[in-house]
Image (cartoon, rainbow, N blue to C red; front, top):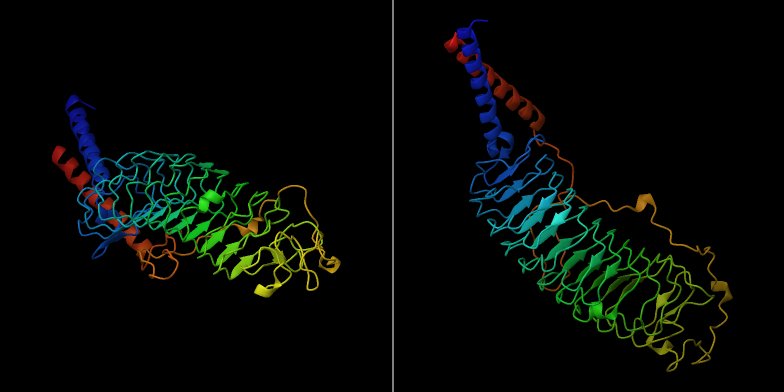
Length: 423
């Protein structure tokens, strides 16, 4: 090949590289995703960076199930109408400071099932309108102090399956409007006594399948509005008698399969005027009678009436005498349990904690993307998750293939034209 041909060939390669580079940088939203009137969804799974030219009118932006691994500077510039951002099942590994500071109208943020190993103090800065935050199945092990403070209107927070081991005093600072907190099957083992002190409007708390060993009464000093509380499948060894004091709105309590919990203290349910559902079975209570504060067979005990600290039945007239652990219909005070030998549990007591069976792993339900505020008098029911695998709607697969074919044909045409001009 002579020098003239070499020069032409080099120019040809430069043109090709320029075309390829231009295509890589020109992944505008409506090329790699499906743009609707106010939405951008169904992005190609091969997308590695946040698309450009996202319409400023976008209300719903779904970038889930892509290879996006970072949030660049000004990635969301101009998206002042955006309400819902879904980054579920992406490859994000961290959320740097001010990652979402341009999204002043954002209400729903989904970051579940991402290998996020680190949060920064200002990760959520600027999200003053955020209502729903999902961080299910992430890998960060610590929560920076006051990280949620920029989100004063947050209503629902999911930390299910997260690797955080400690909730400290400032973990949830600033979340005075939070009504829903789920930490299902997370690694948390140590929750400080004041961890929930800011959650004055909390109505739903799920600590099922966590590693906690203690229930501190101070958890509920400021959370008097709790209505639904899950404490099952934990390592709890004992519960103070005053643990739930003042929770007059509590109407559902789940406290079963805590294998290290062998009894309940007298007065545990005293004063809980709205408590209508208490789930205590299966359990591993010892002895041949129900624990104090309950009655019936120990394998399936029922809570005493809220006017009784101990009892032999469920009515307000079945209370035991003052400071009496046990009683029956004929004796208001007994020093030992009545002879309920026929109530003896047939369940063999294990000596060590048995983790939940694989079949009991939590599977999030399908999710709607629109935030629906709770009714004034009811417990907040947050929108179900957008955690399902990417499934293109309509003829999405064909459309993606067609887009790829069109792109290749366009590129081939440019190459042929460039070569003809050079030759």
